[in-house]
Length: 154
Image (cartoon, rainbow, N blue to C red):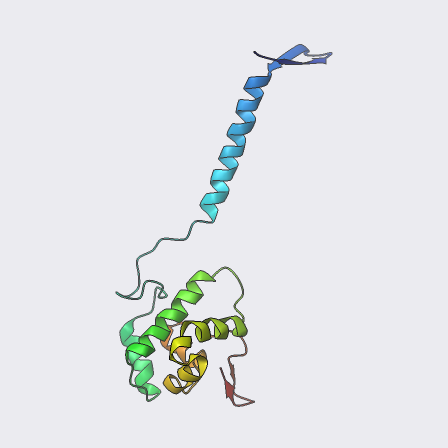
């Protein structure tokens, strides 16, 4: 069954549109718009910067992290690399939103809770698990993680 919508315009005469045709076009438009919106929210696929570090920044290398650790008198072990991976993953998941120091601190505390949480991370990274960890991971630390004037590090 087809229904017709008719409109009268003095200069055009009478025009009619079938309802089913109108529905097809409007649903096609909705599908097209929804597909383009969904494409915009798909994660960006890229090659990892280093093997074993899928969320590493493109210019980051493990050798560079080891060089920074040597300058800061650290010997990197498996737990240090786990912190680096955790930071890189957190930053990759939240790259389109502003990072807050408290959120990152809570995420690290939760991720390493089974080993003692943030207190344990301070034993691994005495320069601050977030500040020093971000330097090792090739990431920009969030605002407030280092305050040289006050002498605090997060």
